[in-house]
Image 1 (cartoon, rainbow, N blue to C red):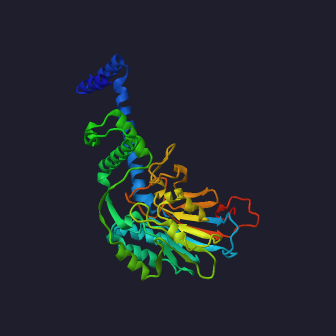
Image 2 (tube, rainbow, N blue to C red):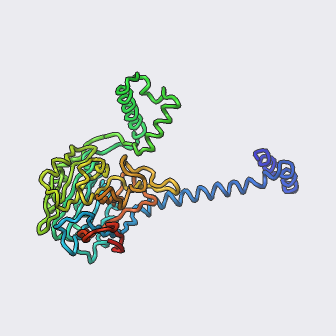
Image 3 (cartoon, rainbow, N blue to C red):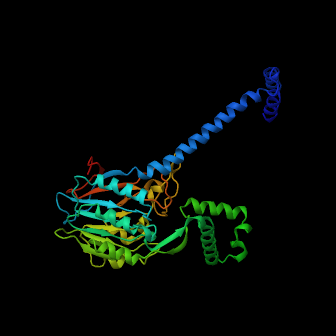
Length: 390
């Protein structure tokens, strides 16, 4: 094909002989000269499609804030949930950094979603901030939401504590991988040298295991600094929000307990201590930024777990699904939305914001959850979207 292209170029220099020479060259090289324009057209189409998809993922979907509705009925017969249920607005992972144009657009979408809504509870499951510079927009978001009847509650996420350098993520993830290899080697009695920790000295077996490590959702940005979490908490508490980091509260006028824990990555979570004062037969909603809390046996006491952190994978590809979910306990199919673990129901929020400002197949959203008491002699699914079940 290259030869044919070169011949057609030479023939084209002569005005009279150009077309016969081109045809003759095409006959000699099997039509390569004729295929070249088709090839370039195909490459152009692919490039155009890539640009269109990139533009969609950067400029459209991050602002396409959806509204999701979910009815969740307790799977255990516990007294304390009002017969008409509790209406909960669940937000998570706003990741505001002070990018005013993008963040103000999201705030306006939330304001529209709230029109005509009456909520009993506002719950935010962490990562308010990406960096401290986003605090003013976080406060503007909270101010845009009508005051909930029973209060606003939150837990903090890893980004509320720390900001990360994602450009260093490959190197940092490699170091974490090798540290785990070293720990496993020490536990098994196998030898390990510092030289093997260098990427340049990695063998095919090392790279294969590293690839599997990354596919297990272990791709981490390098911590680059700390956010002023105290400032964040004080500013939100002044607006009436209560933080439930390692503590529980009983909702006024109900028998429902809200329990929150500190972030699994950057905090000091104490689920057992948080549950200590909660009666065994009380309806319990557990707030955890990271859904991997489900691995704790104590999490089974919760009737409903509300979490975030995963962003729903943020980029969802055909056949593959969510590309990177940041969870080791949930499958890719469970990385957002509703799932069940025994009698514990779990809802994982995709988030309103992004760490890396792109989304594809995982649009941001706000979720309205109606928490309902169990049916007598319950035998159903427990949850229904848009009130269709439960």
